[in-house]
Length: 494
Ligand SMILES: [Zn+2]
Image (cartoon, rainbow, N blue to C red; front, side, top):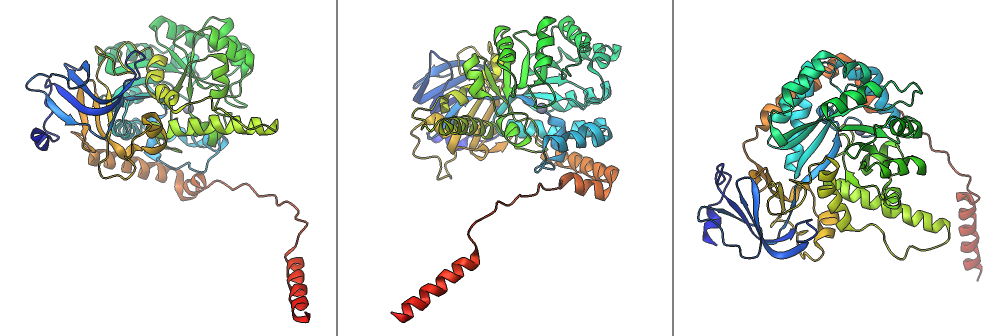
């Protein structure tokens, strides 16, 4: 169509309807399914119609989605966004290195402006990758001033966010009781409606006195969900789950991050109380909270959402999360089968399922599935168009769910719409000042480096490497040389 040539970043003023034309549409809505040659019309922030060759308002701007995949915006249910200011610093860390760095040594040096810088970058990065909703598991909030900085950054970026308020340097039963905490929640909770929601983020130590009870009560009083790192090997164990259960604090809104290395009993308690897991496969694979638990969650019928945890180690795009989840689940099945001298004949986990977890699964975990998570008429329009006409990886497009999981990547995110607003078009973010963000993050890096000093900075980034224990080899190079020489002699003699 000729009108398409005129579409650019300025074609999307507020209030103008938008129609995506001729996409392979993954609605993730069970009654609509997946269909090719599909159109999606967006009017007044909402999905107005889904179908083929839709008749649209005269002033609708048309996005040519042919050869592309249109899917719901992705949902990340656990990410420590402030840590993005030190992107990639911990690539070679273990969980112990991480705890030493943030919890014991350097977490306290971060200032409110550093939280702002990290959050701003993380939020932009999420939106750019088609992650339209992110939970900011913000455990660097030493004071309410920090929390305001975190919320300010999230409000400065056109994405949907959940601020999960936490403070790794304090005791949750103390900071949740502070009058300024209550004031913060009241002051900011209704600020942006469904664009910024809140949770309370803390871990349950397993102390038999259950001091976390007071923090759970605050969450209950404010009607805020609790998100907690559960089943982290050697840190938060079955006792934590048992005490939450016995005190009546496990609810359908509770999110269990990682939920690895738990007993059947704990999984039963999570399932029975309707809680959701947030699986961070790339994190669990690398840091060692436990094996990514989807294989166990499936058997216990516990709903799954996906997350990326932290960009101090890993990426923040859910393409990686989906791929890591599928890889880990299938690897486990093979390993278990081989131990029994069997071959896996059928895969349990399918590409379609992980795309569902990355979208609707996240929305359900956050209690937001009534208005996001699928391409359903009436829901808010959080949409991602995966389309890249310059890429040899976008054709043939045969198995759309498999294409999303194993073929596409964040570079293929062509258009992103959040709350009906086009925030990225033709691979370019709209109205986002990356230079201001770059400068803010550079200041934080410079500051952190100066506080830590050159030596601690370098040691922090390059932890000692584990030693390889060589296995005795009965064969030796000299034997081989000897054999070769003998062969040579034999051939000369013959
Ligand atoms: Zn985490």
